[in-house]
Image (cartoon, rainbow, N blue to C red):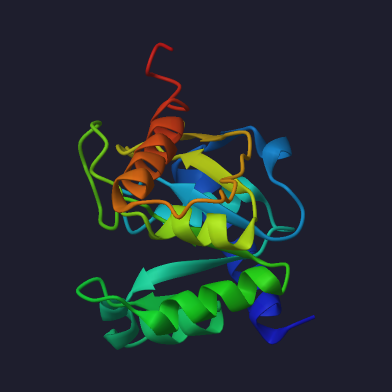
Length: 201
C-alpha cells in the first residue's frame, strides 16, 4: 500500500467521525463510482468540498485533487495535501505540469478530482466552466463522474451528496474547436447541477 493511500485512510476515518457528528451527510449514487481511473467532477463552494467528496465516494476510492497552487504555500495545509497526492495548478496560466501529473495518475488506473468551475461559487447558478476536465477526459478515454455537493452546509443538518452516472467524452475524427469544448464543459456542469436533489427535476 502506498504511503499516500495509508495516510489517506487515516484522514478518511477521522473526517468521517467529524462529519457524521456535525453534518449527518448522506450519499446517493455511490454505486455509480467505477473501479479504476476516472475524472470526478463536482461543483465547488467550500474548502470542505474535497473532504465531503472523498467521504461520499468511499474509502476504497482514493482520489487525487487538483488544487490551486496557493494552497501549497500554506504551512501544514501544504504538507497534508502533498501527502495526499494533490496536484497543484496555477489558475493564471496554462500549467503543463498539472496536465502531465493528471495524465500520469489516470494512466496508472487512479482517480483525479477537478472542479470545472475553477473557483468557489456560492450561488445556485452554475458558473462558466473551464474546459480542462473535458479535454483530459477526451484524451484519456476515462469516464467522467458528475457529483453534486450542496453549496450551503449548515451544521447539524443533513448534507445530501449525489453521485451521477459516469459518461464518456468520445474522441472524434475532426479536431474539436474551442466552442465545442465550451459546450462540452457546459454540458458537464449541467449534468452536475441536475443532480441537485432540491432542483425539483
